[in-house]
Image (cartoon, rainbow, N blue to C red; front, top):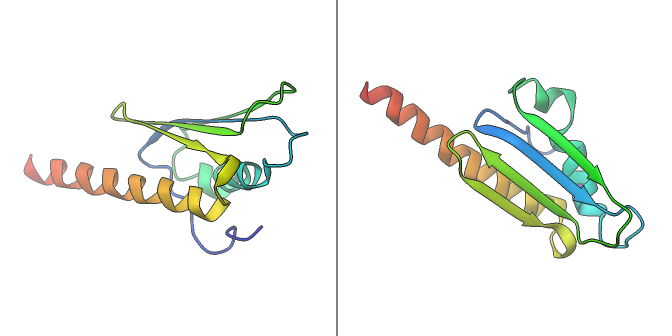
Length: 109
């Protein structure tokens, strides 16, 4: 796994992550690696209320990661043409933005 040791995954701003893939397709490696990263005990400990739901299907469907944030925003990552590093970078940058927005809102109060 290329990106597993590089970054700590923080799920503070996330409500739910659904990872859907067919394990028999050739383009699911990055999606499975992403699932390992967000489903790790260390990542899950950053937000114990975050649901990580793996949906393993045998229907030749494309690998998709559907992320729902606490504020209701959604991020959909189509893993067929992305690396796990690209998926993690997109996910973490949006999480960081949302965390900064939450801190700014709390500072205004």
